[in-house]
Image 1: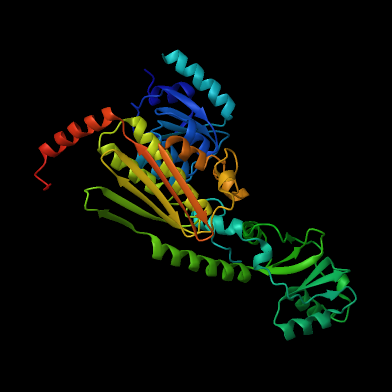
Image 2 (image 1 turned 60 degrees about the vertical axis):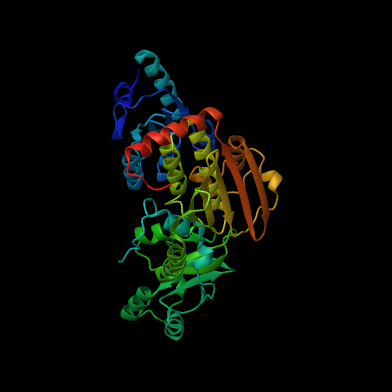
Length: 113
Length: 325
């Protein structure tokens, strides 16, 4: 089983917050429109996005997503980090694009199986 | 020189929304005192004293060609060329704003350059106004006052338990309060988790309440989200005080959205809100007039779930002291 700590390490992305390193990762969903994410992302997935604010955490928490990957070097705002810590949602950060991150994540999840 | 202490990137969302929503034309002074290129520095000096202003734009056929500041006048008096025409001594190296730019631009310009006032041009490059830091702070204070007033009035949560032991929670939602958007739905989700429902059911209710809550934040003048936890279903009701949905059928179409650019940049306005609510609800109703919109969405529990909940609740209450029945 792939947990978020292993996935983060394999991806080599910056860990902004990770309260619960044991949380399971089942897959990923890429999107910036939160209602679209709301309708399609599933439990324990990683959200690959450029939306670095608090509302992204609300969506992740409501859907029980494991982590948010911020792409294109987007920074997480301070209140986003605080609410991610409170909700136990991890945040990773990378310079890579959403496409690259998606491909990488797929590779990592297959390797960790 | 003093800067405007508002960070155009990390300030609270209400402030960010304000400085993007307000345009330069909303804060600028339209009442202009300009001169033409052949006016003398002396004439400008008199104009400044008369009108109590510290900078005068120089125009030629409505086009801005320069600015004479108080400093330029002092220099002219000192060096003895105050009788000269302004065109020889005005500042020509100009930083200008466009009237449709958001106020956030003006703030970062003022913070970056040493100028006390910036001329404003229309789309066709005509001079239409002038902005000072004072214009901006005055308007912002006015708007912030209004937002704080709204906050004070509305930020409470209420809990009512009706006679049928149906628990009801209700949340006030403010217009454009992205800071707290998602709070009501997170609370509703937590409450459902406690009753031991299936994750699928909790997810459906979370989606419905989140989308309705975001709709209130993005589109309404403020309203209320109410969750009723029944023995066989959870009902989420969203009520607001207008402005109403002009075309409800369109609003239920996937991908149709009336959100503005600022809202979209935050990731909202995908046009999936109401369609998402409808697709996760077992029953769904909507009615809208200019006075307000009412949406009722119900997520039913499955037979199996209801059975499981009963035993789950029994286990939970057996461990506690009697709460009375």
